[in-house]
Image 1 (tube, rainbow, N blue to C red):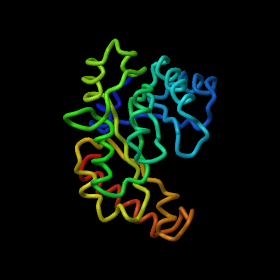
Image 2: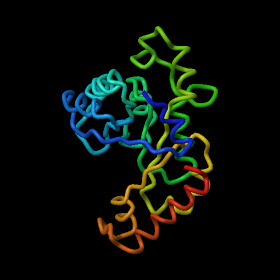
Image 3: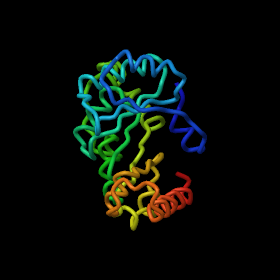
Length: 205
């Protein structure tokens, strides 16, 4: 399994895909298809938490990096996704520096964050608590989604935060927040996306 955090830091290319159906056969096929990572989508799918852990297990056991796209910046969901064995999270609707700080606090244990230390699949059901705590510092990936016009004035502060490993632009939600719902060919939207990419590049995201 690749160390995706290192690849992102070095700005190296990785290839991944998206899972939106709670089908273990599909997850197995996808995880055997030479992707570096697979993102399990909780935001726009019918995948529940029990299905999530089973999908993560299949992806993980096949040597592919499992990530979870959250429904929102919810500390309880972050904790349960990571305890299930996710090695990275993708968080929608990040608009401010405070949003990022909230996410980071949900991901990491004290003293860095505020995550509750429980015993679950990620910690090998209690057999590797210390190892897991050390491992997430080196390997856990934090991806934020920039997808609202409100984020544009805060991009410098957002991208300066070291714990942000990468970002995804959500063009549909971004266009909706600009009043041009789904018009992905709109010149103003394209200009806005270029501005986001330019600031992210400045901070090597």
